[in-house]
Image (cartoon, rainbow, N blue to C red; front, side):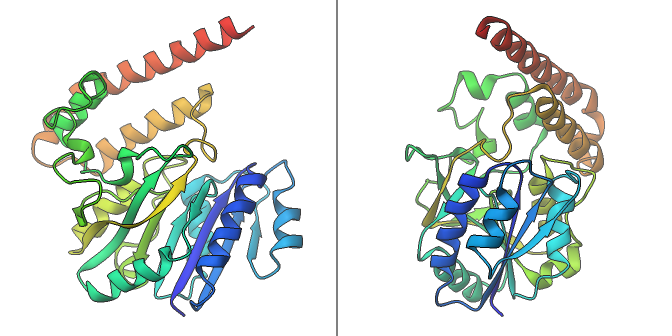
Length: 290
């Protein structure tokens, strides 16, 4: 089997249906299997998948186990040479899987691959290619310099502005919205780290793939639409807290070498600053919406 597609879903029935339709079209000529892991949705996601996509393996959870843990449930069952972690609020092109598998087959050094992503309006999403957080990039992002100077290659090296949006190149971080991983690489790195509940697991896995001696690639010869924030909306207090908690976990767990060893205070301060602003902004939004 060539491909195992894993989709973790939570209360996005409409987006999930559109995603599955595109996935089934893209796997028409590929030996593939599709898993949907539902994290205790309260909408009709499960009944929709069961009735409209009988060929999809549906795993129903009685609680929201988090993104990493839910993915791992399906990853333990995957039989494909490649596994794809895919968000339910995405649409893939008919040739996406064929092109990606072709690239991976011809690049045996590739551990994982990500593609060019655009939002629902066709606007390029900069998280399509990223570098691993460094002391400087984390500082620039945490304290808002990357936001204030979006075209600066210095302040935005986290988003690899030195690599063109249509240029195939080695990257460091593959976005979890579309993360194609060689299955035998997972046998070396292990599955997703379940300490990450909702965010950060993609950065962590990208880091571990590189540490295992493989390369990650940005491959824009195909693209997907990502209706960003539909499957993981960062618009309530819990989601905000989960996001910044993941940032702290990554810094403390994985990046303790070199300058990171002496920079936790600076980085934690920056994370706390951004988290406070996000919570305050959410408070104002709720207050003045009434």
